[in-house]
Image (tube, rainbow, N blue to C red; front, side, top):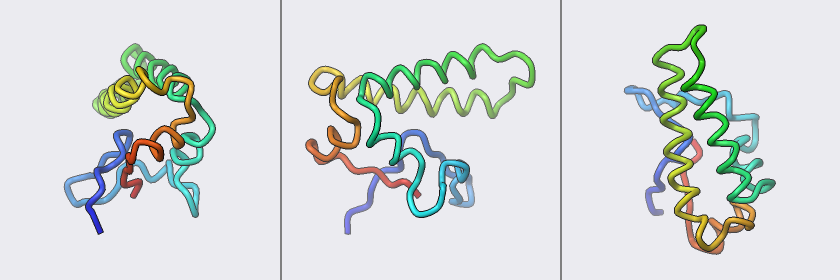
Length: 105
């Protein structure tokens, strides 16, 4: 079985545990559900919103906000690479059609 790259929105701590456990809603990660619902363009817009939100937040802004903004930027970079050919395609469909797989855990 091939080793899958960790999903761009997810990060692991130094002990290898997933820092984003709040994305796991049980049998299937929330990110996977959203990737089946939104187009590449819509998901890119959501990332742009979150990057701005975490970068502009002053009250309670800290290293955690910066880490979140960086993760959203990583995912946005991936989505922008998909935009040329798949901006109106559902993210999960685009990934399947192009053989793109991520580790969500």
